[in-house]
Image (cartoon, rainbow, N blue to C red):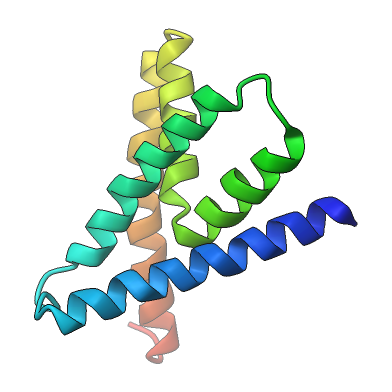
Length: 122
């Protein structure tokens, strides 16, 4: 139960930060291009790298709170980024490339399909 609460608390903070980034972009007049999403994804990937390095042997509770919770609520792109980096570090380059392609193309395709279905079909 403690693990779930750590993830939930961190997720709330991350989601609020993500909302804040979007609101800031609108206030700055940057709503024409998804600058806030790009910034959040890049920052989340960087933060996940720092966190993975700092907590490699560290506290599981901090990993849940910050990695799964805060960064998970901020962007799931951070989890995707560390997965790809770990595959590359293990010299699993083809699986890493396949994962990138399947994730990006698959997610866009799935989103498109969901949108078509929600709008009443083809």
